Image 1 (cartoon, rainbow, N blue to C red):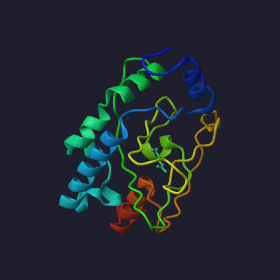
Image 2: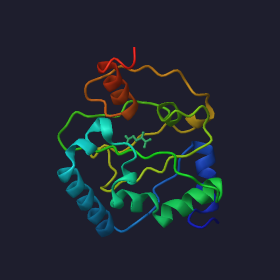
Image 3: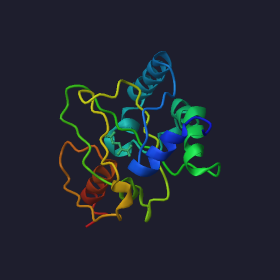
Image 4: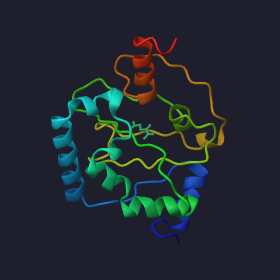
Length: 175
Ligand SMILES: O=C(O)CCC(=O)C(=O)O
């Protein structure tokens, strides 16, 4: 048994490449966090548009607190040990009644990693259901090599790497 995860959950993480759900906070707390984020989004819409939603924990306290959530950090410690650093954060805001989607990818590629020696905590602040746009994973795919990724620049794709490349292309900083 780890600090948060059971032996079975730790085994599941190694077998499937992911583990969940893990209760990180109450529904009320999650809705409070969500309300604070929405408030920040209203006040700073530019910061929260899909091209800019990276590393907002550096500028918004509510996201910094989320990044330091002790349940999340302890669960990460159960999986990779106590020597932990945060590489980056990204928000996938799935507004209702939009055609937005996140295309299939391996996190390493769009985070600029060249191996799989890291993990990603994914924190849902609303119910994580198919209708709400929950994340999908392919069990066992973490055991494969990092694959070649193709940027399609699909209009409604909110995967950050795609949007970032699109922005760089439009500014002629990427060919
Ligand atoms: O929320 C999603 O659909 C994808 C999230 C994701 O790719 C990630 O957290 O690394």
